[in-house]
Length: 155
Image (cartoon, rainbow, N blue to C red):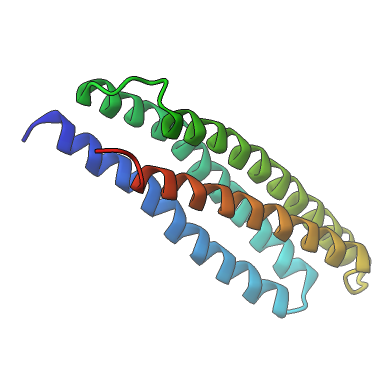
């Protein structure tokens, strides 16, 4: 097998695994939020945050490297609009992801404080979670725009 098909497979894996994992982590987080126990939520958000950091960091590092190798091997100039646009959108998606995870850590802090004091979660946790979800949706839209650019590229 030549190197280019292997790069395509690795590039596809670097896209699919984080998407599937994010869906699973979102379900796990939603289920923990619905439990209404601040201790359970804090533990779940810690796990979600660590796994999300690992997956997204791996993708943010591997996607440009494998994409550059594929463009280089195919003889495509790196100055094409769809390549530059996708690189810029990857940076934007990473920024939104950082904002999302910082909000998750804030909600985790609220949950830890509520758990230690024995009180229910405050409204600040809900507000921070809503802002976090907005950042998550913006990151997801950026990634979908990258996918659209990749699929619409010239042959």
